[in-house]
Length: 347
Image (cartoon, rainbow, N blue to C red; front, side, top):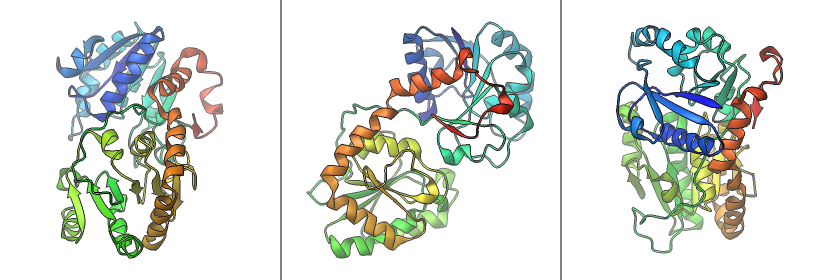
């Protein structure tokens, strides 16, 4: 089976690292994989066949570059069994790919669904929260893979035996970080030595007041974003995701793989990652008192929940992820007409 993977950037980020892991496992399973990117950069040296293909960026007017690439994209696609578009930016090529088997992977929530996305044979989403925004596309939920065997790097804070409660992600209103800060007094009333660690920043400085409120909070250790999330999670006793919108599914799964129980809000819809009262707790959003109670419950059952977290994380390993994706994107997996599929499917 021949797979063409279209990517919009040259510098590998978290999405591209997961993509490379997927491509490697598919190659082990007999797929011939070719990657594309705009220029001959780091992604071209990832160890796969490579082709140059520029689909434009996010700036105004960048879509014109994708339209200019339509003829080349079609010529390339006709040499492959499946074309995998690894982002919504890459989805700009869909009008040129009619007659080829195409897969669109949507990684982030969207406000609208362009008409041409409906021509994709398969749509993948990383969480139910993202899938629910894809009206009419009948997406399959495939959580991003995580490494089940992560070597712990030194903790970026001093460990003194105190319980460490942490948040990892973007510091902005939709992630609900200030609700965790509001829960801190109740947590410390029961556990005076509890430590609260926030790892992350406001992307592009988009929410300066929100970030300033975090930095002004007393008794909170704030660290900038780090790439070693999987290792970092292993140094936490509880990972808290007080999100008001989409679930940070990969971060939750990485925490579970490290044996760190998770407390996440129900609005984030984490139920397909976290098993309530087994590998963590699912609580109401915008309820600091409920958040505090859940954290204390998890700390009180930490050893039991930690074991359950590691067990449940096995389904998010790279091999399991590759098998799920392969079963969906392979031509034989198109079992029913596009209009007849159920929405959304969780894999």
